[in-house]
Picture 1 (cartoon, rainbow, N blue to C red):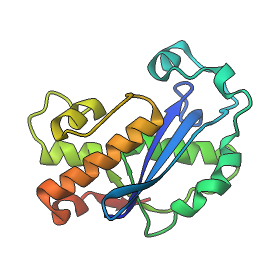
Picture 2 (cartoon, one colour; picture 1 turned 90 degrees about the vertical axis):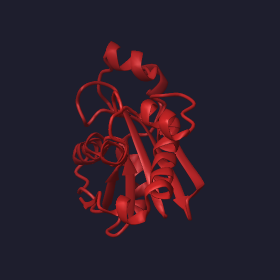
Picture 3 (cartoon, rainbow, N blue to C red; picture 1 turned 90 degrees about the horizontal axis):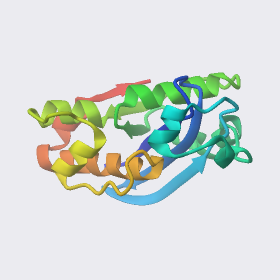
Picture 4 (cartoon, rainbow, N blue to C red; picture 1 turned 180 degrees about the vertical axis):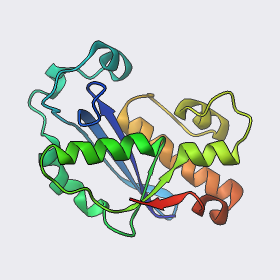
Length: 177
């Protein structure tokens, strides 16, 4: 499988407040490249979000904005290209809203949500949080809520689900944005 696994962390409850992004490029079921950056959301951070991901306003004060990050990554978000995320509705909305703030059009690409995949293919779990699914499938999650660790785990989950259940079982979860 060839895809990009994506994860955002946000500064507050607003989806346009991306404060970190990680992308993990997978080719032939192997991670071949990683991209990670903190992002200056140009918004206030709230204590609850800082407690989750440990990123503060000071950490991003000289970081690029999403409009500065976008030219470096936009080639990965093209029609026909597959992007995976755990709870993809969240991450794709953060992407959309963060770009909209700067007048950048929403990209169109294929999406697969590893949360939805796990709910269907691994029934009976107590919950389907990234750490729970990672544990079940023996996928490393070295720092939950670090965007790079979460992206790597998402990539591992998708690869393991495809190996365990077959590509046809996984393909049914792909949709277009």
